[in-house]
Length: 234
Image (tube, rainbow, N blue to C red; front, side):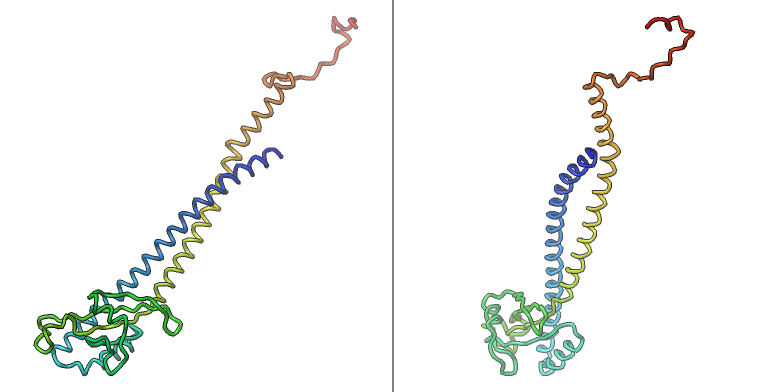
């Protein structure tokens, strides 16, 4: 009973310590991994936006901007992006669409924006990229304009979220498995190497406290024989 109680107390202390340690380390790892996956998804969307912007500028240089609709439709059919929109220098969507506050802000700051949101029940990121009025474009556009307009690319974040969730579940399962394995190993080691020795030491202390040396072997008294010279002594 004493041995079992001692093992439980020791394992409870070590288990709680390991539990807090594993929980803190696991949560931090999952958080960092989640952010890294989402950042990677954003960078992929940014690279795709840069490529599309380059293609649009090439169409504008050739005077084939009318082919933009076919180009955008082909990209949507491939499933690479959910939506792509082209805006003019005033922040209005091509084709008489409404002005976009995000595009106006990007044109005002000259910086690329990443705006997260939802569309059709999916988590998406909108990459807002202003198109600079480069030297090669000033033959058809006024040189005083810093930007020709911009592109808004809508990309799904669901693959990144699913990947992050799957990796988090795998890491959690691995962490719990290792935690249980460590507890079992500690139980076996403590029982064989520590608790049994403590129990033996306790038994020796109990013998000493009773006035009996644990190093002395106690033998039963021998039966007196009638032929013994001491047999006549009462």
